[in-house]
Length: 226
Image 1 (tube, rainbow, N blue to C red):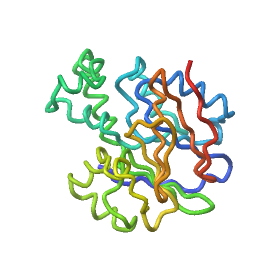
Image 2 (cartoon, helix red, strand yellow):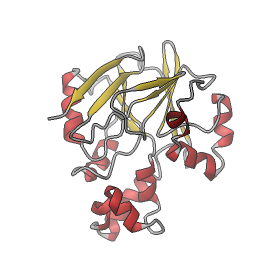
Image 3 (cartoon, one colour):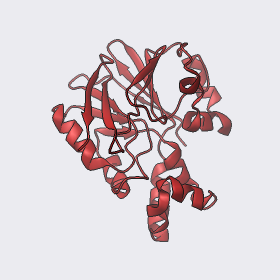
């Protein structure tokens, strides 16, 4: 199991982060087209929760096969990894009904793929390393992260914690230029210290997909959905 995936600096193109996708890949494609995303040289890093709620959850496997697309594990992917033991009705209420309709072989394929997703990514930029997790990281110093992730409770913190955003904690994470997360649906991006919360409900008819340039840390698109 890979806990942290490292990506070297993109010398030829741009790097972007996107918030929770939740099965709305066509709408994400529209947002990428709006900024002139070039699959030959640009990269897209997702904060997890690729699946559930939307009509295109099965497309997650196709996107994860693209060399320019990378994602951390979200709590919804973690549901799929543990599909034999999770509370099925709770998952169904939260958009996981599509998974229950899959064949056994398909369920196993999704679970095996999602188990390869890291809990954290770190991307080199000209101005320093940018980290990505689904919800948060369980330590204030980035250099402590690798050791902390040996425990399931710390990995669950990466998947589930809303402590920082709910309490509006303004201290950041030392040793990293920025941390980019999703998980908490927001009307617009929120920055607390050096932690960027970018799940602006692109999966909802009332939301939008925020694309964050990892080199400048600027929001380059916040595309309203039809």
